[in-house]
Amino acid sequence: MNRKFFLAIVFSVVAIPAFAAGGNVEAGKGKAETCKACHGEGGGKPIAPEYPILAGQHEDYIVTALTQYKAGKRKNPIMGAQAQALKPEDIRDLAAYFSSQSSDLKMKY
Image (cartoon, rainbow, N blue to C red):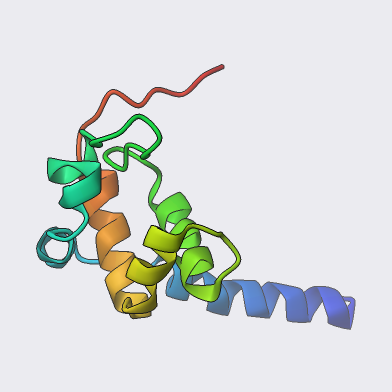
């Protein structure tokens, strides 16, 4: 077996459980209190049309978005400031909570 291929398999198997280990929905609910000021209760009723619906969004998308806001890779003064206080566990918990909420989000094909 090619050594690079073997190492790639080993690293992917090790990395998958760390990423797949989702957050805690109940903990995320408590941490989402601040979020509802703009995104509405459960993240499903934003106060302005330019604010995204978080309820029902893909968990990995929310993790990526919040991580990018925290790192300054996504630019938004409100979200950048909010994300600064979040630890990785907080981000996973919020993502688990919002992704578990029902919403009108639909996949477009």
